[in-house]
Image 1 (cartoon, rainbow, N blue to C red):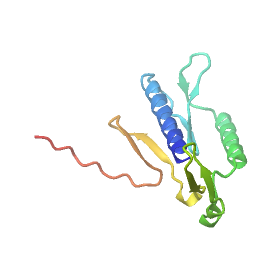
Image 2 (image 1 turned 60 degrees about the horizontal axis):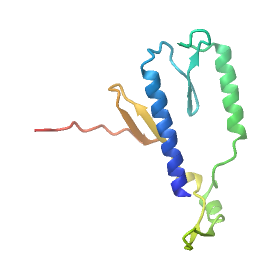
Image 3 (image 1 turned 180 degrees about the vertical axis):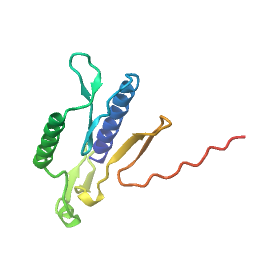
Image 4 (image 1 turned 45 degrees about the horizontal axis):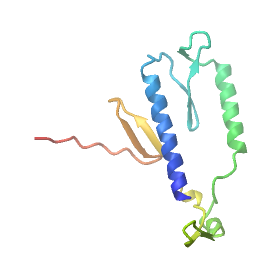
Length: 139
């Protein structure tokens, strides 16, 4: 179960990297519209070029994002006590029996990939402070 989550996180990270790389050569002229945890680029259907969204489009996007956030179920138990209630035994395909439980939301984290001004990507956990990168020393 833990490996599945890691695989999904890596897949999302790779999709973000490839999407960003594919847009790098387009000479974008309009900034993408940001919603909570999402970034959306508006394209003119006639020219295919990126453009600034209208106020009506931003309002509709915000409404849709809020509606989706309200309808999404909780990913895991809210507290550690709720997590302990999910404790169960699982038999693996190898025949080994293990005890597992769902992870409480307090222990969940999000991984963020950001491209710096130098064009390099930095991956960190959401909410972590960015550490200054030490200069590389070579002889």
